[in-house]
Structures are given as structure tokens and as C-alpha cells.
Length: 115
Image (spheres, rainbow, N blue to C red):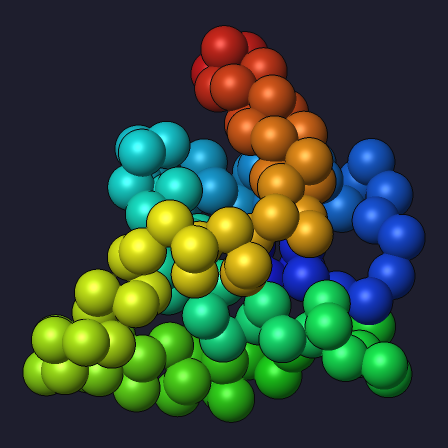
């Protein structure tokens, strides 16, 4: 799902790949959206606000380390947990790519029906 924050014009095959990966994860859609907004968005959203953002993909090892660190912060630091789950933070992190997320969800639901 981090692909949604790349500084590039996504193509239909990008959305299809993300949707397929979401299905293969085995998580239900509500859990995927929670992962999207509270685990991936806090790490990747800065890329949309960068003058020279990453366009060729996030390093998966770096991304995993940052997500795990972020999860630890949410578990241990009350204010941080509140901030990440607040509407304002979610809006700032997710709003630039919300239509991309919605498009991915439509494809996800379509692909699920075919299974």
C-alpha cells in the first residue's frame, strides 16, 4: 500500500497489484484500512509533501523498520497514539491520496468477487 504515496502517476496495473497484495494478505478490508491509516500513512505520507519525493519505491527493509518503530511508539506513548488516530492527523496524512485509496478498494472488491 506504500506505493500509493510514491511521487509518480500510478497506472491501472499499480492499483491492481496493490489490490491483489491486499487480498493475498488475508486481512479483511476494515483491518487493511486501519493498517493503511495508522501504520503506513505515518511513515510514507511525508513523501507527498516533499519537493523531490521518492518515485521508484520505498526500501522495504527501511519501511518495515519504521513501521515497527511507529507501532512501538503507539503502544508506549499515549500522546503519539492519540495523535496518529486523531482525525486531523489522518486527514493530513491520507487526504492527498484518498482517491487513490478508494480506487484501490474498488478494484480489491472487484477482485474478491472473482475468487
